[in-house]
Image (cartoon, rainbow, N blue to C red; front, side):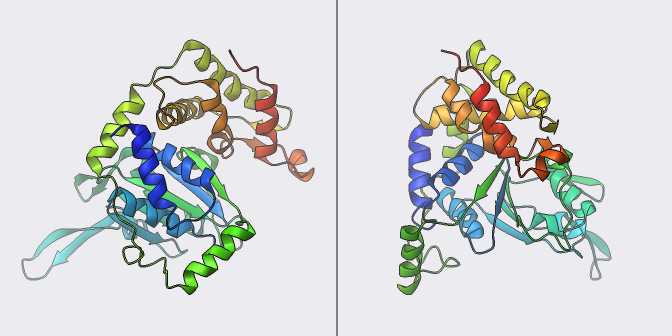
Length: 315
């Protein structure tokens, strides 16, 4: 199965449960193929959990979920040592982070210490409990969610930690056609918590994902595309409204996503449009605006659109 066939089958299966927002599904697929974690931002009730569960089901991956709260401890995420009274020994109790696909729900509602425990696991793909280090299941993908408007009782992720996410995808309200279809399907008996009963099945497996990722890794990238990526990233550092621009890690993220999109399109080379297509979701959480720009109502996406429009596209 080629990467293009992999993407087509998985996206079609996910869309059986998650209606509308085709660009969101595509961005999530690109992140999966580029071996990156994704931050989902949207109002409550927009099916963010359903989206992640649908991807886990379509990929045949073990799914885990953590509801982040202010009293959550790092050991509640990673696991701990438990004393066994019968044997008078300590044994390892692994936490929910030991899942192939993990939903970190409302990640900004837990203190920085617990956030750091998750983000360390995201970076290292392993967890240390006691004196032993345990690898996390392949592919260990984290889909974290946060509410864009409720700030009371939250702990916003620092910029350095936000940078660990390959991209930040924003989910908006569906249009009338999609939303009424959601009502219709719910009336007909579909329930998000029972995807198998709804007919959602695994259309890929770990081997197919590994093969698709190997194909993505082999995609060709010309120097002019690398120069285009650098131009976009460096322009965020000098824009008049930006206080902090994107780092080289952002350029690597753009490169990986561009290769993923090219493979999904059935090409063995990257074109500038592949990079341009995902520039906003890859860079929006890596750019910090000046206070005066925010007072004027500008957001990172507005600045990034200006950067993209001003950058000359190589031919």
